[in-house]
Image 1 (cartoon, one colour):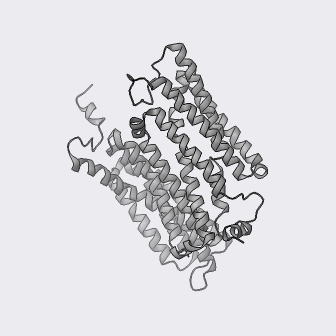
Image 2 (spheres, rainbow, N blue to C red):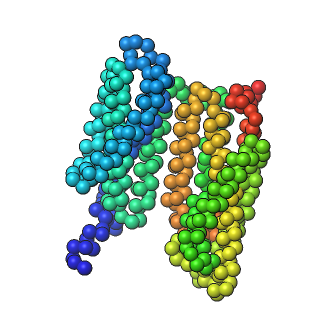
Image 3 (cartoon, one colour):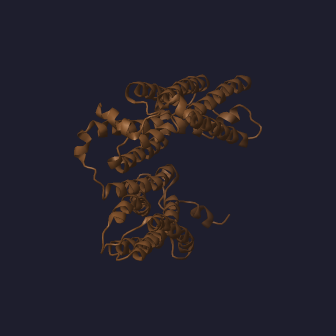
Amino acid sequence: MTPEEPEETQPLLGPPGGSAPRGRRVFLAAFAAALGPLSFGFALGYSSPAIPSLQRAAPPAPHLDDAAASWFGAVVTLGAAAGGVLGGWLVDRAGRKLSLLLCSVPFVAGFAVITAAQDVWMLLGGRLLTGLACGVASLVAPVYISEIAYPAVRGLLGSCVQLMVVVGILLAYLAEQSFRLALLQQPAIYKPFIIGVSLMAFQQLSGVNAVMFYAETIFEEAKFKDSSLASVIVGVIQVLFTAVAALIMDRAGRRLLLVLSGVVMVFSTSAFGTYFKLTQGGPGNSSHVALSAPVSAEPVDASVGLAWLAVGSMCLFIAGFAVGWGPIPWLLMSEIFPLHVKGVATGICVLTNWLMAFLVTKEFSSLMEVLRPYGAFWLASAFCIFSVLFTLFCVPETKGKTLEQITAHFEGR
């Protein structure tokens, strides 16, 4: 090993140690890089509010017919494909920082061309330029952030890329929209808004990410000979029960499946907590469990038996989540909002989902240190109980109802 090799494995902006300014530089640099994905999200979401406006436009403003509207929405992906290739070339030739700076040029030029457009071709050309910038930004920003961040915050900062994309989409939905804060005084707006945001929050607070984090370790503790079998089993259960949910959704109803799903997750997360209590509850055990390390301090036979309890709990949780709290919040989100606020409202719901996923993913390890692993899963069980109660008292059944009937329900008609 040459002296230079250890240096090359270190991030550009290393752990802050005793230097607070150095730590802040990492977050500031990552935020600046994430402005590219923010613009990416805005460019993706822009077509949703822009197309109806352009289809209603009267001369001399450019007008989109159905064919041109489909091209206006889709051509950005062609530009992004070319931008991905260009970005791969740029990061090696021009460097990461300069590549991020350069991708702002087609973003600015593209929206300038769209703003000044006199015909459909200028609109499509502007969208193509913004798509080119999207492709470059989507490649360069994650590479740059992963290289400047030290290991303790790489996951946090890396997650910000997707977060900024959905924030950009939301901002695009909010521009040219008729949504006003005064609308939140109407029951037909604020009631479904509260339900939609709450469903997204409860979905992430159920502990699904925590269970997924422990999947491989749990299967290893159960002495599976083939470690890849764990992911196969998890995938099969997810696909099977998601398909079951799709088949019975319009027969059983949304509320029943949400309640059933929530009850199953209550029992499974409680069993998960019991597993960790039995294997880690002793006074001499550590309060923190490394995801890649064996979690049991029991004799081998007892450890394997308890691990099989955890395997059963995990499979039960995944089945319960897939049949209800996985797909139904997204379905209800598309059903409960009136048409004139659907773009903004669903955008805020999606943003809530990603924010909660980000917070749960980031803070779960810290939560385990404070509450111990069993306490963290019992907390998830408590959130699952609240989700069941929220469904019973607040979520209406939308099965078999038209969108007008659902709106009338919230209005009290």
